[in-house]
Length: 491
Image (cartoon, rainbow, N blue to C red; front, side, top):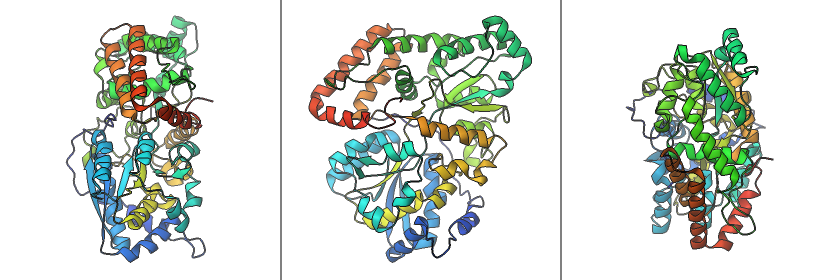
């Protein structure tokens, strides 16, 4: 099954938070001229005929669910009279729960959160409702075009039909200590050690030199050149990204034989293990929170992660009760934002909004997700400090309100937009979870000290066995569709 999202297992006490001034913003943002009815307004108006009904939506457990529980759900009821019941499910169980509900015909769910990599499986099974007719009926097609192209063009359709609205701009960014990179003494020592000028690395070869040298230069300050989360569920995404940035392909497109045992993969695995030597001791066990703590407490000069790191490093939103688990940042105002080496970051996980094909309230469910995903409402949702929805529309990256959240927010949003434009999709096949489990096992074996070539050969053989069991021709067609997308491989 899909790995847990990093913040999913963080236990927080859910308290009524209030709307931190968002209700007033909604009143302004929804007040459009009569001749320019927005998609949000249209959804509200059409949904009022379902006043008194209840729709059920599946949402990722934890902080993510605070969006519909504390913000959008109550606001939707206020505007339409429709109750929203939120079913919290861990990411690891979400795919299975959706499929079980579909196969049983119970219709327990109306609206769904779907990781885009699952969409071919769910759509081909019949679990997702095609949305094109609703999009046209309720005038949402124009606003869908304003979703950032990589998300819009790659995470919305299966076989030419819309099955979900991209709703979460998950993308990896590099975060670095710009105060260290700009420090004259550090730059001088780095130049003396390497013969090179200190700069944010744009290739993995540069990263290896820079990270190792910074660990040496900064060791008296107790700072390491870099650290990453290294637990397999998270590193699996980084491996997919790095392998492709270095020129790797997952399969031979003609034969569907796995090519993850290529020389490229062996080199990538070897380099990843070598890099651990200049990272903090025990980095192989770092998860999302451990890596976050090391960076926010000033112990590392570089890291790569999802967008929340960038906000929390600046201190944005971490003063709220439900964010008390986030370590206090000691580096606010000292963080720079860049694309990871290779320039094509992984659009790791993310979510799209869909409608269950067995829902008994399809139109009401559709109108709710149109409202959530609309330009007006989504702008408010991606600014909620606690809900972990990341910018995914063009307007999110240029919002004057968001740009003013902290002094370097403009650089953060610019980096997110660059990532959205050049990002790489998660591998998406039939039974993707089985292929991904093999990648996770590869990483565990790597940290255990096994030979990279042996690991890669075994993984390729396992992939071939999975493909044979599913059906080579069937999987070949799905892979061809995925590989033809602009975000499958670097261009």
